Length: 232
Image 1 (cartoon, rainbow, N blue to C red):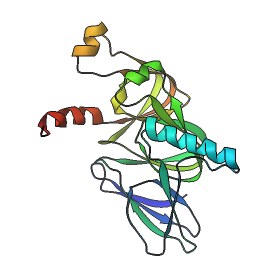
Image 2 (cartoon, helix red, strand yellow):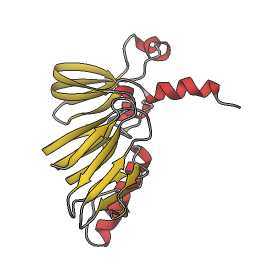
Image 3 (cartoon, rainbow, N blue to C red):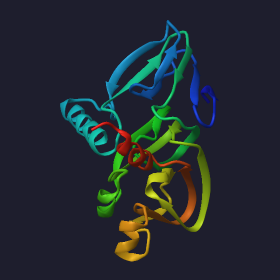
Image 4 (tube, rainbow, N blue to C red):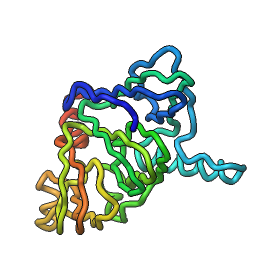
């Protein structure tokens, strides 16, 4: 398991990773705070690397979809060194960082939640359904699977919920969830008036058994609060 420390939780979290020799850390572009001088950084396409022309073309298409629809950057940074060393990472917004061990399972994450990963982790966009197009948080989730480690981030603190039956969460507060859960994106209730006047966005109703990661703050609510204060 990759040696790491998450500092300054839960408001201004920063991830410190101690890499073993030749171990590779993949991180969202722009997330690096600092690194040891001998740690190398390579910029790569934000998609699985496939051999051949058509493989590269597919990788570029996936990366473009993730950039436009899933809120992820087009490129990611790969950190490594023959001697090992340390890397510091931090998300763009103030909030928490959560470490997740992947053991062949699959999880889905909302746009912007991914911070870094190590090991054999694959990522691809997954459409959330027609109603998700109306959600301010985006129409796509980021589907991750494989064996390795993930570090995800939130706006605010992260609360882990174990769903056993059904659970309803505002889409703006979703960080991620197990793919074993079925989900439906729907209006919050109260008919058209409930959607237009309640101040609530669309909600995600989960069914089944699995974990749900919820963030205590909503980025869309922050944007709505700031917009009237901006000049012009």
